[in-house]
Image 1 (cartoon, chains in turn brown, red):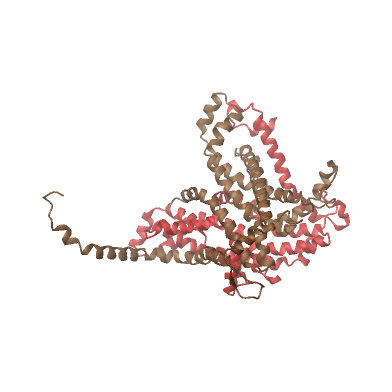
Image 2: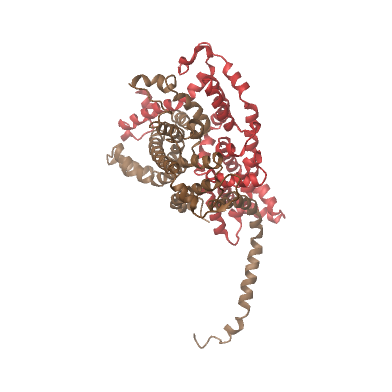
Length: 316
Length: 289
């Protein structure tokens, strides 16, 4: 501290700053009030159905009833361990993993093919894009109604046309070795066109001049795909993969309509297990425990994309 | 080859002779045809008379004696007019409340400075990650506690706030020049008046993009209404169709099932074909709903 500075300064301001901070906070809070009022309606519903629901899952997972009418009893982590040792749940997790990988990879690969083939804007491409996009629009229940006939043994569309080529006709939805794969076909059919849109958007970011330079250097289609297009599409791949995995957990209406998790639990997926526990067995404790485990797994996944999403929405 | 020349006419000269892109295009055309087969079957089977027998049901060649009997049966067996009204009420109700909540919240994020903005931003962002379908169990108990079990309001309520919509509107509002608002401010317009008369009219494209996403996703919702609704006359189209399919499957009435499905997805398909460009650009912005 230099001698030139007046020594009295710190003393003189030692009392007011606190008041000042408080005052400034109230002023800032008052200035923020209109914003809070505007946010209030949204926050009320978010509090009830998102954060409140999260908290409820945590609490409900700790309680259990001996019979549907018995009083609630605190059981700690018993529900979680009961779910984890339930072969139906672990089976559903394994099925869901197979289902996630088996739907994400083919639908993303197809989406990329479609986007690369239809990136040009002309009437033919846009008609083809529309055709591939149609399944995205319709409810999963409607898709299930159509595929129920497609997979129908003997007289169904698949057996009628392709079945003649096979020595033995599988019962597509009735055979526990095949049913899960049949279910996957529907998901791939329904989602490939959706992911195609993101690849089409991503392809527009591939710089024209780099592509031209590659042509001049004599790079073939494969080289251009491998060294220019795919690196450019990396963020799109990440984004679409996250959506595809989320869909594999949440978009399972066809299981409800077509197989009810059967035959012998071969198409039982996690969300269907949760539904069964809650609605068919009235076991809210177990349903909540299973929800909690699923949420934890998905949060781990989405945490990876959290920053990307925050940036996508333009930051706070 | 003439067709190929036309389609690839705008490709750089160096790549016009390449064979791989053409093979990829052919494969895509083939797959697009495969993709349309379920829809084609739906239309053909709807018009096929029952007298053709079950063995001809899979035939993709249209019947020579088309009939509307299946449509009439589906109309009579399933309560489709009632289901359509319920779905319309649900979609419209959700959308109207969402318009209010996302406009207000979007404006706060776009134009106002306030304490805790970052925190609240992340609170909203969390909704994008917590897919609502996963919270069906706790939300069902909440809806029951609020006395809204088996009501259409109960089906709508969890969707009244939308983080996706809020961010979409925020983006739209940020693009509007502040000079316009300043002019209104000088004329003494209040905050809500400024939102109502300046921001909302200038953001119509974003509202319509949001409406497309919101309506298609709630038109297609199945699991949540299945859990909340108990009375048959309150079922939305998806739940109605699943019950109808179960009933008709027992009697092997596949023509009737096809007709019922056509009735459910017909409105969506027609709207899509009319507003194709708008639908596609809206879905690109949606990402995670």
